[in-house]
Length: 135
Image (cartoon, rainbow, N blue to C red; front, side, top):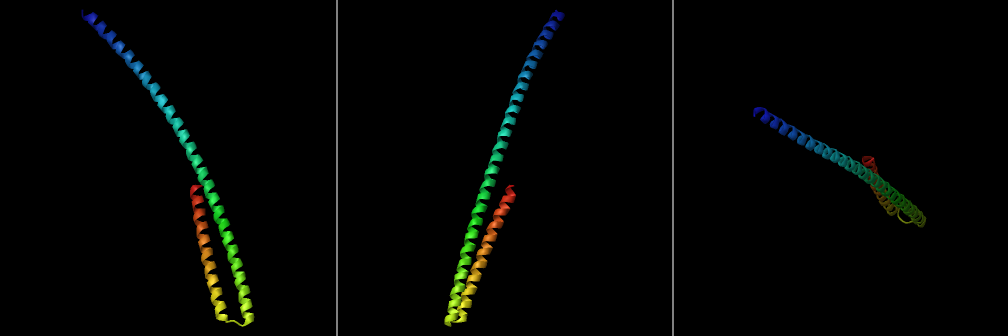
């Protein structure tokens, strides 16, 4: 009887071992599927990040070009106003108007042009910093 009981216990243990091996195999397959899913998600995320970086870089470059264009236009307009004021100043001098008024207007224009140039340089610095940060 003891031998039969030992044989039954051995058979039951063998069966449980087979079931455990089968479960282990299933778990290994699930782990591999999960690993493959994770790798696909990681690749997709990396591609999305790269696309976002490219779009951001393109947007920053467009904005820099717009700011540069705006700065160029503003400087051109300022130069035209300064030339116009010089012509007015020349005409006023020839008519004998006061030099103090001409100097005031010249100083005002000079201050306005310096402030504009500083604003433009600050905008360009910010954009260049943003482009370097994104690159």
